[in-house]
Image (cartoon, rainbow, N blue to C red; front, side):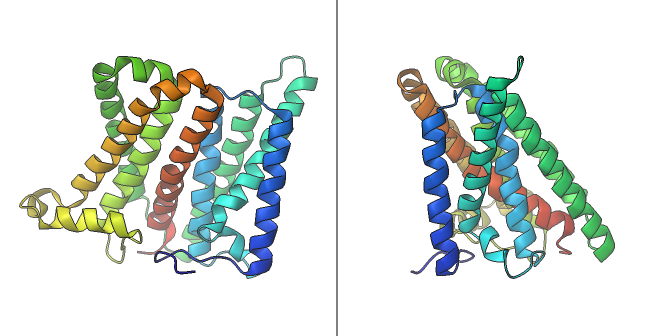
Length: 276
């Protein structure tokens, strides 16, 4: 199978194991049927970022060969689906047996704790290797936050009902793709040694490079605009879907957010400790 640059199928035993794991966990979640609210999607956000961090560490050669294939792309999506699904199931069962238990709170707390722990480990690794460079990751996070706020305000003003119906889930989708877009733009414009692996994204960046504005503000702004326009359009178009099938719609939106926040988190990690 020919995959885009940077993507590779894991060896067959790993692929079979991941497939069985995903099917098994999907069946478990289907049987338990935990409620899916806007806060569920928020609680899933650290797990989305965690997948990106793990893939970034894989790219930097952190893991032993025996488990490295689990964190390559696209295998990392299956790996995280299994781990997140099992944690979600645990959180649901825990909420049922505890007096004031909350599935979303437990899921989000565990994900955040693991993400922070792995981030601290990554920083420690960067310090030890002499490759820690936090400037651009911090700038990217701040800019992504500002861009997310502006995009959500504009969407709320122009499509008030869509913003109201999708709520926090919509914010997660916009924010996730803002992180990916901004980190990609910064990587393309200012960090040597960074190249875009996705063909369509590379084309958009090349178009931005050909515009008269490239010398003044770089090429990445066009990618940020296109990314956020598409993310906003998805939120608007999902309005009726969320109304009619809220559980399914929120899960699909969570997946859409994951394919933005995962790569964005990976970019942040590589910028921070990759020695670029």
